[in-house]
Length: 267
Image (cartoon, rainbow, N blue to C red; front, top):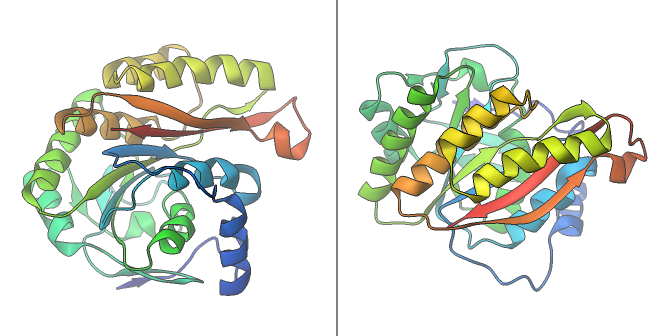
């Protein structure tokens, strides 16, 4: 199955030449790259969050496969949806699904449903693809959308992912797609987001999960971030670094109602 782009021309430029040019302006030249286990990258329109995504993609050694974990904004499909075969199209190319890795994750976890419906109109993973395709046209993906999950569900998925990653002999990066606080005054967003970011930097997945709920932080991808963090720890991660943080106010000029964006690497 070929998954056609749902938000080309809206969240990012709709033709190949303009999209390449758009991504290029957000990549940070001369950044030393690091081998990472996991990362957090935003998924708003590139005009707002592209500079944060570009900074974090510029800081990593690009793997053969990205396991993409994103929130399900549309409500379609099951609680945990993994698309296990086919390809995703964007204006700059086609990205193949890593069937071998996807199958290992699905087989190991009965809570994971092999499904494409949840992915049809969902933007959170699609918005990562222009950067992945730009950095490595041959990179493969494993798309996973999370609609609902308990903390135990997150740990169970993390366990399945970590075992699958250990079983293959090529580099894999676990990418959690998330924006931070939504539609808060800039000062409030920064205060709330720092609490969530600090939990990620402390490699504390339970702390992140509980802090987001307790503090009512409108971080749409806290479930993907929790899974990524737990899986990264299982794979031996020892540190995390905030590459860049920003809010939409820096682009829009509207500081009364902003969305926060964080780019983080875990290694």
